[in-house]
Image (cartoon, rainbow, N blue to C red; front, side, top):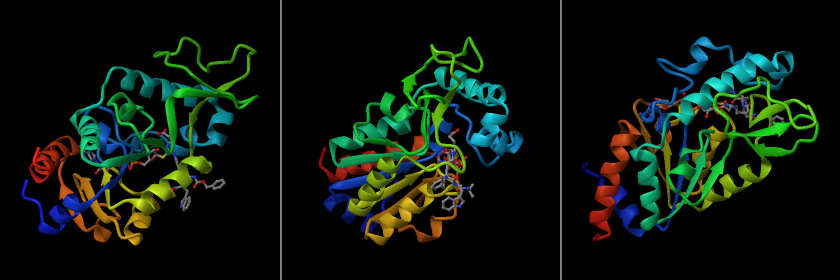
Length: 246
Ligand code: BV8
């Protein structure tokens, strides 16, 4: 991979690297993305399975949707792109802001992860708001209930729901302190997540995008690396090792 000299300069002097990931980084683990060719939202009405209203109307339908995704994720594992982001920690202070709910960055061993949209392996009690782990795949009872018989929901952020304030505040802090900010595998279609790379850019981060196609933020980036994350990231870390003399 031939790197542009501005990028080499930034890679040489940078300390903090912020990363924001979307479904595209897990695509090479076999996990369906949301938009594009075989996207989940092509065949499944978003408002029915990814809103609180849809859940209250038909909790069984929503849990069948998440159970299908939990089964898919339970059979997959982090790919070389996730593992490379862990390796990046050998050279920089790396903070990962992810829109993904698959937990793959944690499984890959990354240290600083912010889950903006929640985690598919957590459930939240509709009665008490208590969050607990539930890794049963497939679920034996749909919809799952708490010990006291209350309805449980996936602990994910649906459309129309506010993102966890702490996660959002920390993400904005990371974006404003990043020397380099790398956006990987997201269509940048969903707010407020899609604004985070722009905040990094405004705070003078060198903004890099890795995607198989251009997105709504490509025109604002300093460098667009076209290709699969599972290919581009390992090639990038090879160049970083040369720069760092490793
Ligand atoms: C909120 C649930 C307000 C979890 C998801 C302006 C400001 C604020 C809000 C809005 C706004 N405008 C509109 C809104 C409302 C809405 C929104 O953004 N709508 C959009 C669609 C117009 N936002 C919200 O509702 C948010 N809430 O703002 O609430 C509020 C405030 C206070 C009080 C009350 C309310 C909540 C948004 C979260 C919604 N939840 N999912 C789940 O089931 O997963 S969204 C869903 O999209 C997922 O979370 C996913 O992570 C997210 C983003 O998708 P991507 O990850 O980008 O995936 P996608 O398929 O789109 O793209 C994949 C990309 O990868 C592509 O670019 C592809 O080219 C690339 N790719 C593919 N293969 C590879 C690859 N790249 C590299 N390598 C490969 N191999």
